[in-house]
Image (cartoon, rainbow, N blue to C red; front, top):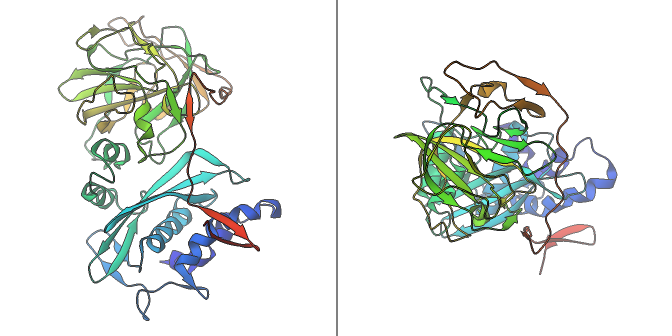
Length: 396
């Protein structure tokens, strides 16, 4: 547990190797660390220090309060998963014995980045204190068990599905029989695939340069959900409910196979629930609604879903359960490379598997930040910290 001895030095670790001009950004997290440290030592629930409790899947470390536990979990995540990425805690929320916080990436000037982010979960056990778990550090099954136990008033069902970690089964197979979800002979760029909070999901920029390309169904099926009522994007990561502002279409292909087309443009969907769609059928236009900073298509497939929501409510949405990678006719899931462009054959498919065609190309230029009234951008709220006399303190 080398991380425990480095909690009090986390800001130096996070910004190691960077110029002195941005060291002030490290102060943003120092106050959080001071809550977990006294005189350079980890905070202790008793004079003996944090206690540990072995379980079947992990060893838990207990702290006297939620913030100390969350900072400890962020230190673990930083050391084991993202040692080169500056992070800071935002969105600290708690209810009784439950709390969560988001560790969000920032640039060298301390400005927030959309990705990556990590959601830290904390719980207080009677007689022991607070412990916290971070995804990709704690076993996925342990993280999901704790997530499922959170009160719905703190993290609702759909947001839990959004945050749920994938437990990969050795015998699981990727879905097949799909074509890339845009018109044949057109190019689309991969801008993100997999990663923290994005496992078995992929982002496409159809046509490149955020051109708002047409979105096609990737396989024949029945439309089971349509939402096109939102005209809002936001930059606050889940579990904040702003992600639910995304427009989307969901197509069912079998009892346990669905595809999701997310961030669609406002009122851009030409299909309705119960419509049968085939290859070559447009189901929307890529957009930037929901948790998004630029025009793109968020695509995923799943074995299930949370309950369908009212599509006329722009602030609510369902989410996928059992997210599963897709091997497309044109390229397998493992072959989708960020920055690479691929030519779709959707709408030009015969009975035989078509020839794979990929075309290298530059990473598309991100679209500018949306401006009202077309899109309302919701500002991120950070854990309040100011610097006074060279020492960060809570904002009053």
